[in-house]
Length: 112
Length: 112
Image 1 (cartoon, each protein chain N blue to C red):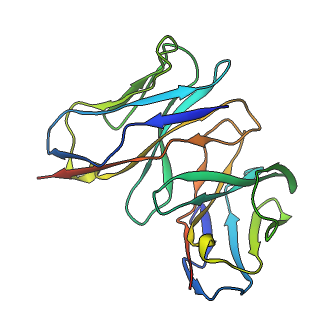
Image 2 (image 1 turned 45 degrees about the vertical axis):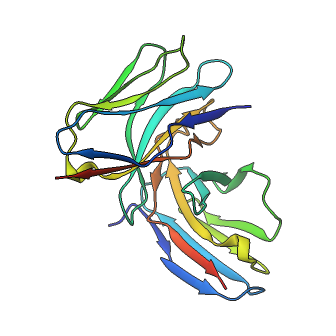
């Protein structure tokens, strides 16, 4: 079946460090891929997305590239801030009319 | 002017009780969802409605019953609550079912 696997957390970094959160997926065909972020006490917000192979999604300094050959969609940011501390979810959408399938989430904690 | 609002935010109740969680969206979206987030932050789809019609019904106990009186509202009623129902329940909506979903702040349900 369709699934998303994320690296286990928590990830603990100092401010201005480089961030990578790994995400791989299993799906037939060409799903759309997403990163959502959940700040403490809030609902999830869409961070970025990519809908086809080699697309790069980017937002707020975060980037992820849809790699079909490695079935991956790793999230990166060059210099994290304390305000980036949150839970990050990788997700896929198999096709319109179905629901998002989420990974288990990765907690990021950034200290000053 | 909250986009997706859920009530209540916190709900503590005894085993065996029946409770409801309400959700409203003012975005004009056609599709609404209920997700369950367990203690390990894992998010799983429960139900989805499109224009008041049930389109996704995952394998959840039939003690859970969604109701959509109109396309702006999707309520979740739970009968005979069990300890294992304790979780955070998120309502979400989307316009084109293409993965960009707007989430409410969640309802933390604790069954004692």
